[in-house]
Picture 1 (cartoon, rainbow, N blue to C red):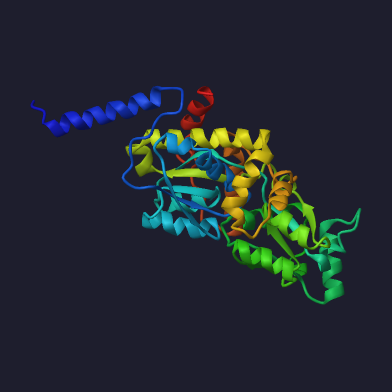
Picture 2: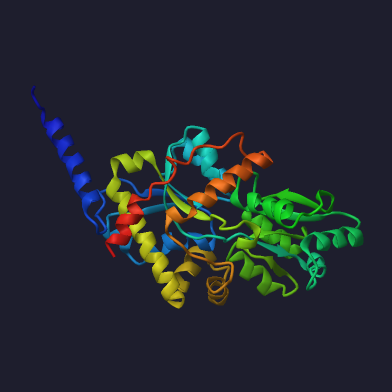
Length: 346
């Protein structure tokens, strides 16, 4: 058997990648000829990625990011399918759809849990009096308005949509005649609630802090854990192509996210300007970002293992409401080894 120079170089690259995975600490990614293409939803749960970048941890590992924002997870799945993204930072639920379509992507870290909450606009909020069950509040609204309460959320198959439906039908036991679900993007949902175009909807931070700050009559009615127990939220998922060719890149990205989650928890005031620059775009002030970081709707968490059971439960419910044709095995969806190495290296 003979070996060419290409064979020897290829074997050397493979051994180098294996050695990088064997080290417990953060590895330096192989030099990339192009930025890592990251899709994000502009919500507070995406903050760990921006913090890891701004703190310089990703740059130290040889990683530059090219970030594209999306209105929902299902919209981002189309970009994954087309091969225009390397990393997905959004709700875990649409990834079941992705796998059913043959899109090979792995969840390597979480960023937040129980982040989707229900917010009632002024006209609906007045019916949520102390001691009044949510189903009764919706009934009273329809009786007073002569029409069902319009509730905004993201498209069918998204975590916000699934969470809202679970809360309405399984927890609150609302009468379907009393509510109407309206599908729209994240920014549109926020604006619709502020403008009174809908009576309520699912929001995540910093949108909750924005709308309640601008109109005190808007109320946070139900937290994420009450809407869907142990509600899985935003995750970091990486394509199989990147995992196979650049495992050190994936390891460095996860290490940065783990460090960022820890920093956000310990020093929210330090990271607030980073979050403001990434998500505020000059439209959201620092005080609002700080309220969002301290919000009961904010729960940062990086361990992907902690959301496996809840993800399976959410997928079962998606089948029930028709968002999925069938349950997709989750055995290959989660890849916790990068998280485990990141924690071991701290």
